[in-house]
Image 1 (cartoon, one colour):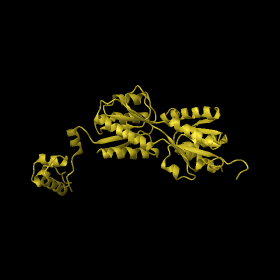
Image 2 (cartoon, helix red, strand yellow):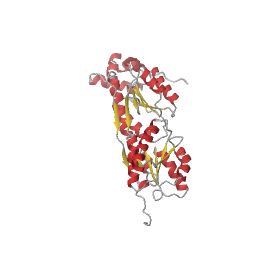
Image 3 (cartoon, rainbow, N blue to C red):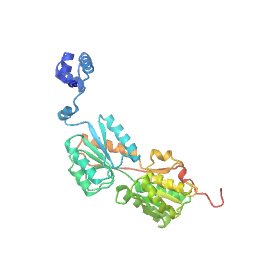
Image 4 (cartoon, helix red, strand yellow):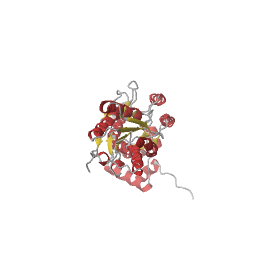
Length: 339
């Protein structure tokens, strides 16, 4: 059994009784008479014709596809970011392709270099580590690009960033206000963009609020399993609060606390960062710093579209301010003798 050949533009023109040029006008949304439009659309439907995207991209010089590169598609914070990017670029007539670098610099560089094959018109990338090789790949890239992160000021690239250090300070102030003073900080890898920024925020708040008495821990990754692995050491110090560098780490700590009979929030307050959808559905609900993943995604998409429209425009930096969503995991500490 042989498959039927793909319908051609000429076949559509023959069936509609018009020229190939007239079919092209209708399919590209150019002015055409109502009668011609009706005949062409009827022929397209009858034959099941679909435009050849590859041929069209060669003709018009664009693919109408954009790429979003994230470190870990399993982290729910990137779901909100992806939805926001997709909504903005869809309204502009683009499809969004999702790719992951699996938190590996080499894979992210390969994705950037692969754009030279012309499968997309631009890229938004959220690298976990802002290394020199990543920066070099961005600067040799001939396609429009936006970074979600904090590239050096000297690198002329559009970028969107969250003020996560300020977010950590919000969380620390909240914990102190609720009566906690033995606060442990569980960070992810400190050689990453979020690890550096969140450590900076904790150090500032620790000096200001706790006179440097806070305890610092670094997990192997920003994952639930990494949170569970480090939780034993953290809880052995008997803190009255744990601030985690993301929600996934916080979920891991809460799971181990529960297994040890440590009550959240009565015995231990727990706060996360990212305010993912899961923070609202775990029990108790997780207090978390919202870093505006949707706002960052939408801003990055708008910057990319602006760069495509005007490649010579000056590079722009956008900063999204954080806010704190308070839930049950950090209600005020119970006073001794009060039930």
